[in-house]
Image (cartoon, rainbow, N blue to C red; front, top):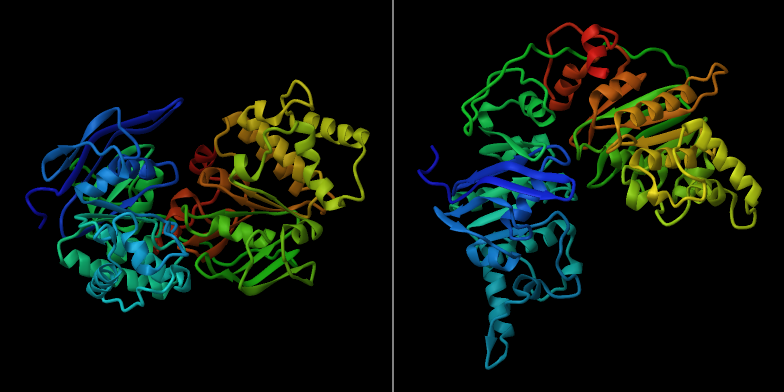
Length: 536
C-alpha cells in the first residue's frame, strides 16, 4: 500500500524550446520507500522531466510539490538543498581527487578556516560503511573500477541528506555483478524510506528492482502502473504507442486497453549461402553481450530493439569505432581485425552514424567536400582527388539521390535534414562499400525523404548481377524495418534474442520478442494487409 501522500509530485509540467515541445502536461509521483522507474523511448521527455526536477530547466507551467509544499528549484544546488540529489549516467566526479574529496567536494568540513581532513575522511568512511562498502577513502578515485566510482557518486548524493535519489541510467556501463551490487544498495535505501527514481532502458532491470513504473511518450505521461500489474509486452507497447495486449491498472488515469496476443517467431531461417561478413561471439564488456551475426551481400538485415538494447553498440563494433574484447570477425572467409574505422573502410565497410550533427556532417564544409570525405580518407593523403573528380562525383550523387541544393559548393549546414542525410549517404556510397551500416538514417526527416533514401538503398542491395551491398539497417520505426528487411535480428538488454526471416514477424510479434514474451498466435507475414498498412 502506498503512503497517503507522495514525498514528491510533479503535475501539469510544460516545457518547450524553439520549434520543439519537450514536455506537455507531464507528471510524476514519488513515494518514500519505493523504487519508481521512468521508462520511455528516446525523445519521450525523460531527461527533460529530470532537468525540470533538478532545477536545470524552468517549466512554463506546472507545479513541483515536496511534502505537499510547492517548490521551484532553479539550480542543482537549490534542488540538493531541498533534498533532491541526482546521479547521472556518466560519473561526473574528479578522478584525480580522493574518494573522500569527491564525496564532499564543495562542502568540505572545516575547522579554523581550513579543511578538516580527519573529519572529512571519517565522515566519508562512515557513509560508505552505512552503504556496506569498505573503501580506502584516501585513494584517488581513478584507482577504483567504474562500478565503485558509481557507488562513490551515490555516496556523494546521499551525503547531502537526500530524501529523493534520482539515478539516470546508472547501469549503462556496469557489468552484471556490478548491477547486482547496485541493486542490493537500492533495496537497503528503499527499506530505509528513501524515494528512488530509477531511469533505465533495460527491461530485465526494470522488473528486478521496480515497485512502480511511469511510462512517458512524446513528452507526456502515458500512465503510471504497479510493476506487478504491467507485463513486459504491455510495457513495450505503451512505450512505442502500440495497443496494449492486456488490461493494466493505470494509477494515474484509471484506464486500460486490450489487443490480441502477438505472433510467434518463424521456425528456421531460409538458406542464404555463405555470409560475406560473419561475427562470432562479438561483444564488449558493459556494452554488448557476445552475439553471432551473418551479413549477406544482396540482403538487408534489420536490427530491432529498444533504445539501449545494443543496436548502436553492434554497429560501432562492426565498424571498428569501439574495440571488441571478445569474439571474431571474418570477411569473405578471411579473418578481419579492426583496429580503427580506417581498417573497416579498407575492408569495404561503411557506416552512417545516428548522430548526424556530431559524427556525420561537417556543417561548415560544402556538400561536395562532405561527399568526397570518406573516399579521400580511404585513398590517403598521397592520392588527392582532383577538383574535376570531386565535382563529377558530387554532381553525380546530387542527381541520383535528388539532393536539393543550390550548388555542390553550398555549405551542407544550410541544407534541410533530409538533404543532409542524403549527402551523408552519398559520402559512403562513393566508397562502393560491400557492407553499408545505417544507424537511424531516417530520424528527423520528412516522410518523402525517408522513402527516397530507403528505396535507393534497397535497390543497391538487390542488384540483378547478385553483387548488391549487404546492408545493416537500424531504426526505431518498426514498420520501416519490417518493410525493408530480408532478415531481422532482435536485441533485448544488450543480447541477441533471435534472428527471423522476412515474413515471419509483424510489428506485434517483434514487440513480443523485444519484451521476451512467448507468443501463441499463428505467425503473421509482412505481406498481409495489416502489415502493409503499418508500413505505409
